[in-house]
Length: 326
Length: 258
Image (cartoon, rainbow over all chains, first blue to last red; front, side, top):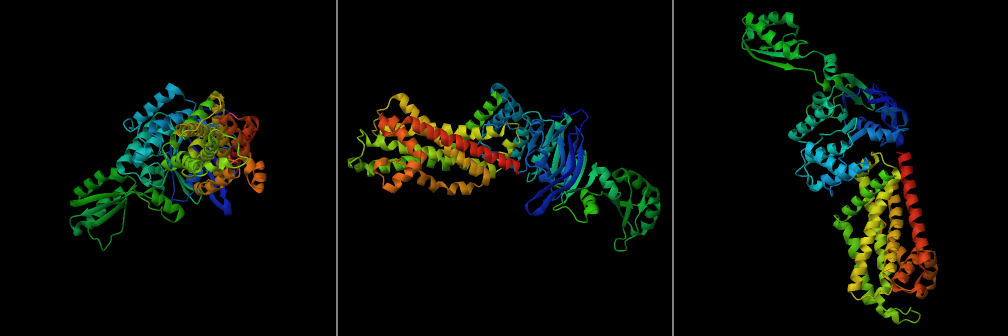
């Protein structure tokens, strides 16, 4: 078994291919690397290959070709070492509804070598961590979707994994439950856990991920920090609504030095659009400049490029249900 | 090794406790064999007057071995059904993602089957005793009979698990339920082998359950001529080892071709 060096990437994938019956390539020559301590968001529409990739990285599926290493270990040749290093919360929260949260945690502890008092203690700690102490002895069948996801996360943490795989952890959750899960993921990452997160929610990727990989048809089509990716497709646009259409020309003159002023739209004579890398930070200078030229402003709105714009720019289509999580 | 033993015990405990929380599995494993026992004991007791029927003190004690083995078969089958459910609903993935030996996943399931069969057999013997059955066998022989039934449960549990692993289909497992009765009734579960029709008598000779049920009968009635414990043990252990190996092989194949 190879001994990973401390500087090894947490996840390293090279030329990964997974072909299913009928020649369908769910993953088609994927290359990516996730640094230790990073939150990596794997973003793509349904059927893009996200889950297949996660199943390969978590040793639940064999690759057809290519190499994948997790925590420095090959997912095929050193599957057991990979399993010791990872925690997995799967999309179909694989939880037996007839068991209680505490029973599941103790069983998961046994799967990772915890017994007796140590398993009981760890189960109690994790129930408290995810806010399920009161519900710990109830059968999971009676849990809400959010409670199940939190329990699933706790189960993935039993053995203090170095790399945590979360496959669409907030799909179907209400905003409150989603927010609670995001906080927990950030907190785990602060403690040093590398997080590999698949999602189809742009907001989730933007909120959580240090870097985002966008996958389409089994291939990585874009990768980078969310802000960097968005900057590649264009600068934010400030939409300025004026009180008086007669002041539009003065406004354009006043703003010319702050960015690229868009051509006037005859259908909207009170609107002035300014593209500027400054984004929100440019609001104050814009207001000041307009004020100095005696232009009265009704409102200013900032429209930034989204990861969906990034996706559209590289694939020509939009993410299914793109935008914010419901 | 100690760690894997802990895994087997944890999975066995889980399999057993969940079994008792599924009413749809409790009904066939505990109630159905008793219903059949009641029908046979009350409706066919005149059979003991047939020429050639062994001289048994208690007809109920004669037919109870069939109930024990029926229970064992049902324990094994429901174990396979639960296994298929784990696969179909994703719970098995949680187990596969854990750093445990793959064979421990099978043995854990089998441990639960053994536990279920032991409880069933004690329950059936208790009910039969309350209903007036007299068991002439020694307490040790009774324990041996319960143990034989449990080993038999492991046999069918292994086959059912192998089917679950290969197909992952809950409905397929449920559909083999009637075939279990064919296996039971082609063995002298409720009737002496010597009084079976010639064709069935010949078939029974090739059915390993024949030797198990006769051994259980011999142990419960204290009449060694009813069936040799050694033959029964050999048949039960043979089935259990072969079926567990089959399930382990099926799992290896499934993982190899994932």
